[in-house]
Image (cartoon, rainbow, N blue to C red):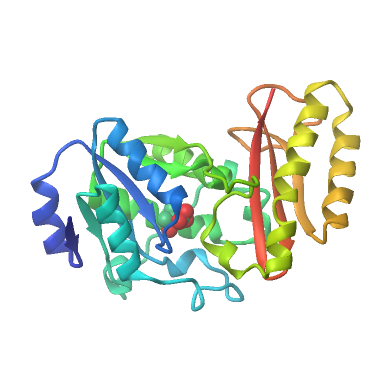
Length: 274
Ligand code: PAF
């Protein structure tokens, strides 16, 4: 596996590879990330990845400085997974002092995470645009766990006519249904035991909506159930799967999306409806 830390090293390595399948990450890798590398391989592409904890997508009171970092462990996992090239840029490379450009995607960024974390998707779109330009992959792979992020990136790629195909990959879950996430490690054992209730409540809500129960009543019952499990829901909504606008009745493509705080962690999840 080639490790590139400068643009010159990346360029030398990059020209030796064609038809790559790129997985951008912030490190602290888990099976969800490795499923993206596996999907690139399965698509017949040469897997590449980046590790960069992107400061511009964290708010001032968020966990940028505490975000888990384990470069040696991550590189071992990527090598084992068959990744051909990993890009480890510095903050100076990604955000030179004189930088004056950022990417802002309206539409799917507007609500939900976009409201709760102002500026978050500007940071994501900006860094993903830079990484795609640096890596020039045929396809880029993103986990469906961050459903809204996938829609924002897809919108950006379509609007900027970027020559890359965005491939969403289904969420990887623990045996009890909890979506894998780098931040799950911050849950206490009691919180970890309660966390799978988010998926369980959402699955039951999807079942009820699909059998024709009134959406608002289903969402109200689900919010109450989450609170009963010790969570503080930030949002739980039925939305159009691509533009993320709220729906009061399922109308494909629709998605149930949720974020709930549990102790120090915000759990995010989403499920297809109908
Ligand atoms: O999903 C993530 O880990 C990040 O948002 C991404 C896409 C790597 C951009 O920093």
